[in-house]
Image (cartoon, rainbow, N blue to C red; front, side, top):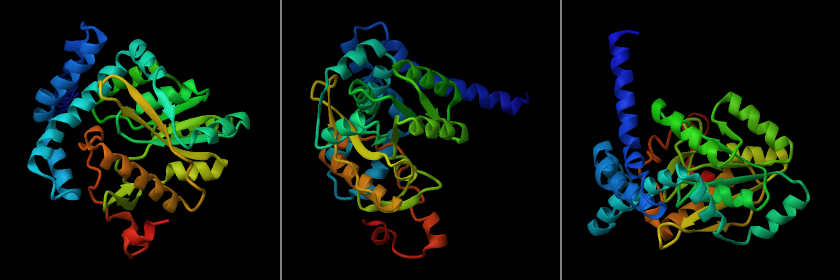
Length: 310
């Protein structure tokens, strides 16, 4: 291994250890304090060092330019606090599973899910980095679904290995983004299984659909899978309660079958409604709107917001 490669590898490990530090430091504490302390350390130490504060501010300026400064500063702390809590929960599987199992599950989609389960109909759940998608994931397993989770590996390999192990400790199967993971997920759905897909990350091969009033590259995979397998496409949100430890699980009505672009625009719109209602629970750190006018320009040079509407 060359010297520059060694330096990059050491830098990657150092960054991974820094990201894991709040979880490691808080691990000896009782669950209630462990979650709160990890959130606090992530918000006050990791976020400023990693540049998360700046990303939150930049994203808010892009979609909510008139937001008062006091609210911006509140979100610059609340958003990484939320992320830290989620990571601490992921690494506390026994206690977290108990909390998720106790969550109230409600919404207009529940009857549709019960019917799908009785008929062995596959379900594609869509969610986002709002509250705790892992709480939603565990709640749907508790509802009786053979649920597999589709995930995008993190760039930091050191941190990703630990993240994947923690995801698997919560539930399996899990499917890594890529050809192998896609094959596994197709097989799972073909057996009348269910999958959970996070749709609120920038997809380089996606299409620019409206999200919070601005075009954002959005994946069409979930809608295409639902159409291919005759599956329900159901948005589900794990909303964090006022205690910071408990959840309610909102199951929305299935998205009606249509073309994939229109279906995913509905998903974006429903997530946007949740984000507007509780902005401190959404992960404003992602580069969600980066290059949002890209792929569609080559094939269909027209207004993407109008084109994408159902």
